Length: 288
Image (cartoon, rainbow, N blue to C red; front, side, top):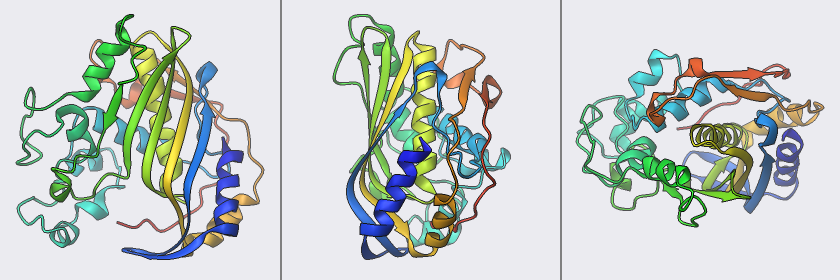
């Protein structure tokens, strides 16, 4: 996994085009593709720097429960959404009606209640929108429907983009069953911060593929990642050059210890990462 990622980093550093964006200068390439094997419980966590995989998994489980309240992440010491949940940032988006830490109808809302009217993060949206995630689970459990080419999970809802603290970067995932019981996921991501965000996104959707395979009695096979705009922030270059000088180690394994009846009931205690031996962490500035 790490070799593919470092190859992308080096490609962007060498061939990327400079761009001025809403939150800083970047160098970017357009239309990148990565593929990661998931067979034999492999999980593609970077080894050339220590990844906060628990924070990544906490966020994913938060999405899967349909949550949009940043305070729930803060209880687990996960702060990745805090810059976008601040009063200042919400006001910059014109979201004066949302309380601080209410992120609006972002990923979790769209996954579990697509296009349901959004009032606040405390509202119970059950049965008011399309539960895309449960529909995928039901299809994957059906021997007649699991081979469908319509197993789509979309976070991009043009009708509610202006209500979100941040429009989704990872926009559409498609799930595929081949050979009767092997599950793959392909993700289209419109925008990817290669230094910080992309390693998290790779891990998150690989976790999701493993969870769905485990939950639906399938075997995880592969994660395929399409990135529309793959960019590196100018002040991440030094850190990424340091990381590129480290030799990758073997990918770790994921063990899911419990199978729940409800896809919403998985918790961090149900997961173990085995044989993860990364280098030390490398700090990079996160941008809202």
